Image (cartoon, rainbow, N blue to C red; front, side, top):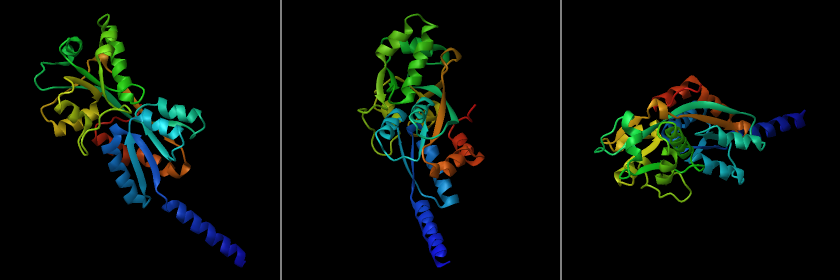
Length: 260
């Protein structure tokens, strides 16, 4: 009897210690503000600590593949978590949010959604994107360039050739601490037009109010599905919280749409 009580006590202690260990979350940089609020609410409701790190989804995937201990991965696309799942990590990838590609433009550029492609093709207009493969935002921008080919023959090659890959890569310059990277790129005049998520654009305009933020025209519109992968079951409650009405409401406050 005493041995049984001792065993129960030991198991309870181990369970408490495991619960006390912070959950390791890795999430797309575009989720930093929204996911920060979600983590804060989750910690308050559950008492479970979470260590969150944010960055380009492709680079985060590479870190996880290299052996970094991560419990939950929230990617700005479905491909990167599906790649990990195919290698035996986690059970399934769940869509948890949706975003859209927008264009940020300097204040002085005369621009409407209808004239966006024409202006991006202009020789005197510098077009910025994030880095394809490393950051899904860059992949989505290049997808918009592919769609441009159906509107203006030759546009895809011209845009991919001239695009300045300014953010999201392993060697991309970092903005000052606490400064929105897209506001920084535009304030420092590194690009005239920059394609990024609409949610990123909203945050950039909080720091650089004069920026123009435009939705892409329908013939260039690109949507982004965000995917969630539970790598360790300890993180299941956090994943469920992100998918819950409370978590979805926070994402909605930052401009994310519910998954389809």
